[in-house]
Amino acid sequence: MGVKGVRLWGKVYSYGVLQCREVYKYFLNSYTFGRMLRRSNLMLGGAVLKDTQEVVKHSAAIQIQNNITLLQRRAWNVLLANAYDELPTQETHQVKVAELMEKLEFSSKNDEYLKGALKALVGCKVEWNVLDKDNKWEWGVTTLLAEARIKDGVCTYAYGPMLRERLHNPNIYARISLSMQNKFDSKHALALWELCLDFLDKIHNYGETPFVPLERLRELMGIPETMYPQFKEFNRRVIKEPIEEVNAKTDFQITVVYQRINRQVTAVRFKFRRILQLPTPHTKQATLFADLEDLPAVVKALQEAGLATQDAWKIWQDGFEYVESGKRPSVGDFETYIQEKIHLLQHQPEGKIKSKTGFLLDAIRKNYANAEFEQVRRA
Image 1 (cartoon, rainbow, N blue to C red):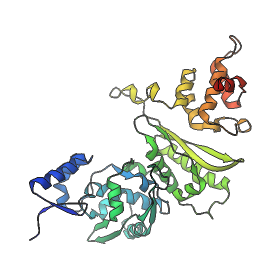
Image 2 (image 1 turned 60 degrees about the vertical axis):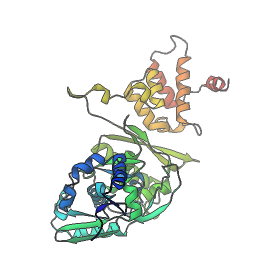
Image 3 (image 1 turned 45 degrees about the vertical axis):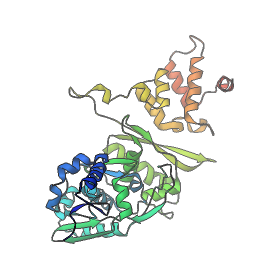
Image 4 (image 1 turned 135 degrees about the vertical axis):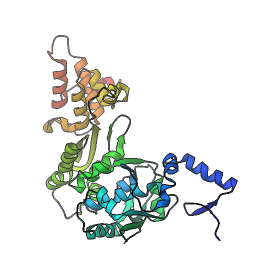
């Protein structure tokens, strides 16, 4: 007769006093503690898809090389949401095929397409941390699913042990709405939306990615070098069209900033903010507008200079793209550029300009010269 106990990451803890304290300490430190207690009895009942509306997804998994289809990526998100609370204690997970199809809003009764999706996920190799976002270099390779089986209308599946532990204990994570992901028509739009969620400041509802080299962006979007070799076509199909879809179908507003070397685009940065709904009698105005000290430095400086909030956000999001193409500086950071234009406004003689905000907008857009600013900086 085997020893009764709890299996946690492959180790069996018996129900003795000292061992139970160790298990309790683990669950207490887990942010899934409450949900695991509530669902402990439900887990014994078998393959029931959890009533989960979002999935916690490790940044490394979000930043996969995107060589899977839109449905396959959505299916993997749903499978992860179903398995999430069980990851520390179970090596395999189950879900009824009918409920999985319903969660994916997939109307076909032919499960051959689902079998093909599972087969692709088992065969899809993924390198994690491709953006090195943890500030620690760690390279790893695995597959999105280790194995999958469908029998008697139930799908049983498993993750590799290395990936499984990382999926449940993400030191950096994003929450992905399972209903929202079904709205996308393009896998590039879904991948972009997940990437922006990954870098979202969830308290202040804005964020930006680092500059992503074009070759790395191809990996994230699953675009081989032979596809869209001309940047004009790549920009339209892989950058601009996904941005338009995300902006149209979600509460995100995304813009792209291009990094150029000798006029050639070498990397892109995505800047974004969430456009929250207007307050109702049951919500507070504070959820719509962040406190001034919580804003990006550029937005805060422009607001203090007198610009409307909407204009300030647009300038921050557009970056140097807001400046006329023939007037953009070749070097320098955007925050310093804005400080220079605000300094120019503040040192205009009294009565010389009719509209301070109009002057500032033109100064930014047309790159008005300000020789005194550099002298002040050096002083």
